[in-house]
Image (cartoon, rainbow, N blue to C red):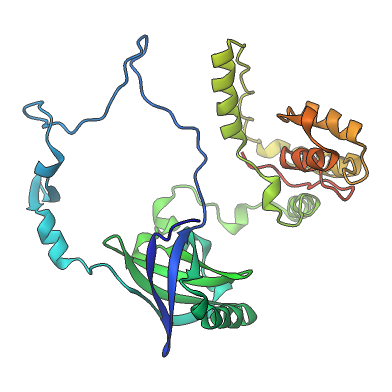
Length: 320
């Protein structure tokens, strides 16, 4: 069983529910160590005094905040501890807001909240159900590992999900940060707008997260495997050139034709035979396909970029 990374009490009004916080996601990025080229020597990161060149023990390191003109204020660890809010034992809800009103730019990480004992399941389920029925999210703050977090709690199926949020002063203003923000007058004429809307509609589908996968991670893993086995490494094609405005109409029309063509030619995986699914799995380079059952082949083809099971393709672009 997973271990809670934080335990405390979520409270709203006079109701308090002991809960544990659990990571909802995990990173599957291919990990690398660093080596000096041409050798088998690992490169390691060390804390070095820039004046003497000597390594510094971690216990001898203090923090310094720059206050201008190269001047720093040195702060000791115990001084930071003295003003820290301490290990919070409570996530106190201050407001309930419409979930749809929270701009996604504020979201940081996602966690699951679970009651710490069966005795707390009823008030937990009550809060979850009430928020789900009202489309609301609970907003409050809590402290974890010496840092205060703004959080939004929402219903997600049978559980409560907690999203840590950026504070308002941490979100940058795009009008102040970006050099090229086109105005509404530069979006093109009505004909181009109608074609863009048609293209979007032709590529629209239901959100199915299982059909997207990290293809770059797959290519990195394949690169490592190919080099380990002494096989030739196949390079990817270059990124497409930007579309010139004079070619915009043609590019839109060709995109619409391609999107609608893919939908009309999409195989019906639900009625495909095992032999047909095996051929598709081979085309998509699905690992372990020869030992899969028919249903496992269908699922693997869908996950590897094959089309949907209902006779129509997803139509949407695959994330990379």
